[in-house]
Structure formats: structure tokens, C-alpha cells
Length: 286
Image 1 (cartoon, rainbow, N blue to C red):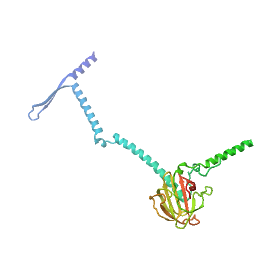
Image 2 (image 1 turned 135 degrees about the horizontal axis):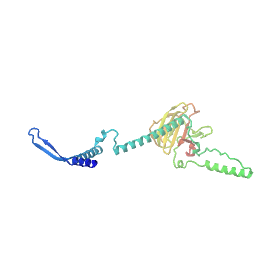
Image 3 (image 1 turned 180 degrees about the vertical axis):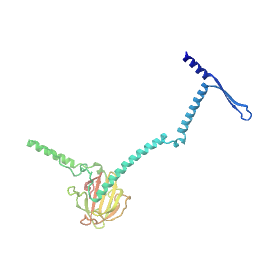
Image 4 (image 1 turned 90 degrees about the horizontal axis):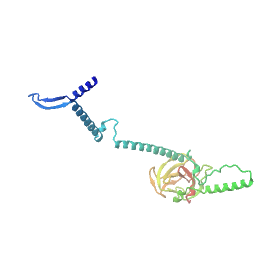
């Protein structure tokens, strides 16, 4: 009974009407008045609160005011952040690749071989004979030996097919005094010509290095398409600068006898493919 009485009293209070009056402070006349119950007052408060919430959300989402709120990002800003993060990551990879490539070029200029050069990828003339255990039968051993020799011969004949489609310009007309030889670590061909003969670019490309080294004298390096790099050493004079674009057959230097590792006027010509030295005579008819 007490609970029912409490509910009835509560409901009665909620239904009681109240008058809200606004008076004129000078004349004390009633300017505006309203009859309202507690239930209506509560409902009006809820409606006003919802309107304020939606208005605030609309202003934040669709007006520049959201830029003043720390940590709030619009969908466009989020896309820009993600895109910038991806671009930064890609740029870091490109910078690392460029640094590694520049290190390889510096190693080539010094006359050394990059540490990570994999000769097995260059199938022009370097092949290690695989080890095998001979059979007890003499006939089987002879047959296996012949089969192995045929396999080696076929492998040696394989060369990067994409290079045969490229027309290389002869860098210097002359006689080859020393051939390409991996055994003695001579990763180039030496070409002898007349003093101050003109040296030409073998392919169109961009000059990536021009300078002096103690061993090779005046050196110029050109980066070509198809991951090709040509190196010209022991020059007497360099006619191009770093960043210059050259065409095939364009004069880039004059033959000389500079550097400590030279025995006379000649051109030390190197050709690199994907970071691996290859024999220029396989692709250029000197």
C-alpha cells in the first residue's frame, strides 16, 4: 500500500501544472507566460539537448571548426596521412636502393667487384663444374662424364637474351690488347688506339660519375636503360659532366694513359649488367 501511495504521489507531482511568467520590470505587466508540467519540462529539455547535440556534430563534421579539435581528422586528412606514410616508406626504400647502387658504382670505379655480385647470374662465360660421385661401373662413369660435358657446353652458350636485341656502339676503334678474364680479375677489355683518340658512349644514357681515381686516372661512368652501366677508364681528358645526357656514339672523353694501373695509352672499358660484370666482346663487335 505504501509503494502504491508513493507512485501515485510521484505521478501527481509530475502532472501538477506550473506557470512560468515573465514580467516587464518597469510596468510589472505580464509579457509572456506558459503553463507547464514537470513531464513537459523534462521532454522539452531532452529535445533541446538532442538538437544541441546534432547541431554540434554537424558543425564539427561539415565545417572547418573540426581543425581546431586536437586528434580529429576528416576522411580526406586520414587518406592524406595514409598516402604520405606509404610514400615515405617507398622513398626510404628508393633511397636505400640508390645508396646501395652508388656503393656498387664506387666499387666499380675503384676496380673492385661488389661483395654481393653473383657470378652465377652471368652465364656468358663463368660456370663452376658441379661435383658428382662416380659410379662403380666404368661405362656409367664415361656416360655421365659425357652427359655432364654436354650440359656444361649448353649452359656456357646461354647469355642474357635481352642484350642481343640492343645495338651497342663501339666505344673506341682499335685493337684489343687484353680480353675479359675473371680468373685474373680483369673484368673489362683493354683497347689500344691512337693517342688522344675519341672515346664514344656505347649507348644513350646519363653520366653518373666523372672524376679522378688513383688507380684508373680519369674515369667516366654512364647509366643506361635495361640495368646497364658502362665504365671508361685511363682517359686523358673528360668531356662530360655528371648529370649530362649522352647519345650512342657521342664523344665523352679522349683516350689517355692516366692512373697507376696502366701500361700505356689505352681504354679500359667495362660493361655491367644488373650489377654484374659481363664480357663486352660477347655483345660488341670490336
